[in-house]
Image (cartoon, rainbow, N blue to C red; front, top):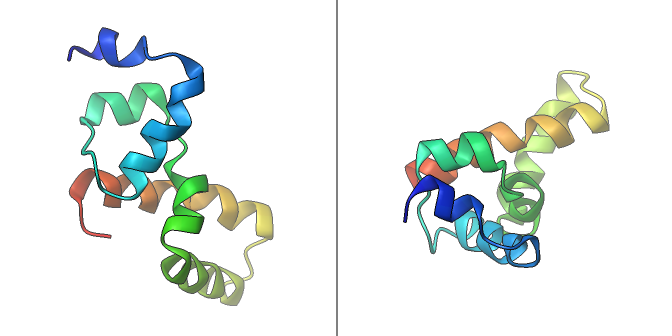
Length: 86
């Protein structure tokens, strides 16, 4: 699929796509991750609860606020989803 076709997926299916990405059942292109901004960080909290717990524990040790590490969790999720190493 082209990027335009990927972005044309109806919004009601985007959570499913995000779950497929977070659970590594589908591998995205870098362009899709940059443009579509899927919910892999939010969904990854549930799919990979142990990794999220470790991430938030470390974030708490460096005095990050809950909102900070909640939003910063997206980047490692995106990168792991792209690399397939979570």
